[in-house]
Length: 220
Image 1: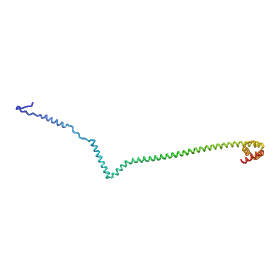
Image 2: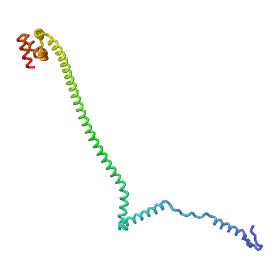
Image 3: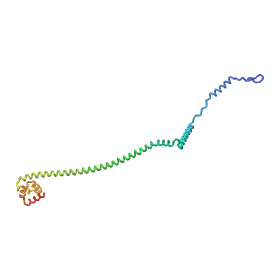
Image 4: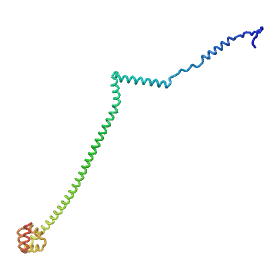
C-alpha cells in the first residue's frame, strides 16, 4: 500500500536512483550492441552498366581518333587490319597455287600416260610385224634349206650315175639312158660327164632322141 501521511496526503515515493542508473546503462548497452547496418555493395547490373559505359567511351575515343586522323591513327588501324588479314590471304594464295600445280601435274601425267599408251601400242604393233617377218623368214629359210638338201641329194645321186656311166661303154650307156623317162635327169647326167664321152653316147642313141637331148642341153 502506498504510504499516506497522517493528514491524508500521500507521502512522496522514494526513487531508487541506483536501479534507474542500471536500467539506463542497460538500455545504452543494448543500443550500442545492435548490429551495424549493412553497407550496400556493387550489384551486377551496376557493374555491367559501368563496363558498358567504359566501352562506349573507348569506342567514342577511337572513332574520334580515326575521324580526325590523330597521330596517323587511320594508317595504324589499317596496318593492324592488314596484319590480321594477310596470313589468311597468304594461306588462300598458297592453297590456290598448290591446286594449280596439282592440276597441272595431273594434266601432264595424263598426257604422259596417253603418250605411253600410244608408244606401247606402236611397240606392240612393231613386235607383231617383226614376229610375222621372222615367221616368214623362218619359212623361207626352211624352204631354202630343203631345196639345198634336195640339190645335195641330187648332186650326190648324179655323181654316182656319172661314175657308173663313165665306166660303161658308149652304146651300153646310151641304151640305159634311152630307157629313162626323165629327160631333165638325162641332161643333168650328161652335163656332168666328159664332153668326149657325151658325144660318143649321143652318137650311140636314136637319132631323134639324141636330137631332143642335145637341144635340151643347149637350153640348160
